[in-house]
Amino acid sequence: MNCDRAQLLTDAYMDDEIGVAFAGEFERHLEDCTLCSDNLARRRLLREALREKLGYFPAPSALHQRIADALPRDAGERPRPVLVSRSVAPRWMALAASLVLAASLGSAVTYYGTPRDTGLVADEVFASHVRNQQSPDRAIDIASSDEHTVKPWLDARLDFAAPVKDLAAAGYPLVGGRVDYINGRAVAALVYRYQKHVITLFVWPGDGKSRSLATSLRRGDHLAEWSDKDMTYWAISDLAAPEFDTFVRRFQAAETMEPPASSR
Image (cartoon, rainbow, N blue to C red; front, side, top):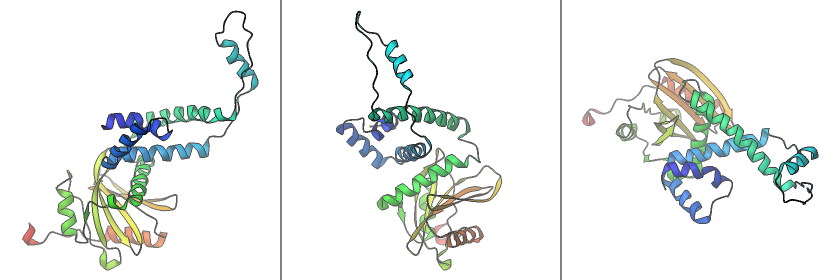
């Protein structure tokens, strides 16, 4: 299965409307495709948000009757009243959700590339962080506490040089990194740890503009976003706010380590 077909099957998969064979093929594709896995996670987040915001409003009986009158029927057959059971309600909601989704995707096409489109980027950052926490074996591609090991590995796989900093002395040791996909491009994902808490720091090239630190909260996870002209940074963790803020400040203040002379 390729990504184009997986994208077409995502909504049907979420609604349990594809067979076991297709579902298995779809899930196997997700195991190897970060882009499609992130897409599924974003769709699920959107569905949950719609369920929280959209209420259930039963259609009036007059509308039922107008629909029944408009339906074709055999000559001489008397129109029968339309009875709508509560089991139909999810389909009405699914239709409303699909319309909202279409509007959301239309907005995304228009604004997806803007630097401060933080809502969509935050969704992707959150989805990637949660997904990789649920699958620890996929959270790290290169496991090492040595920035001189992690940085060359990332640089060889990305079209930019990601800044990797050693924060072990401050209590935030580096545990590794991976290549991820955020905002439509490959990015560096640096994984740090504080005690038993994981901190994921996503890094990709900036747009030449500095942006001050902005923080938010997403389902118990703290997010921080900033830019230093050269790079854009997004950090996320379930750390308590003081420890999370300290991590961000320490990373901003730390110097990027130069590789040892022997590796230059």
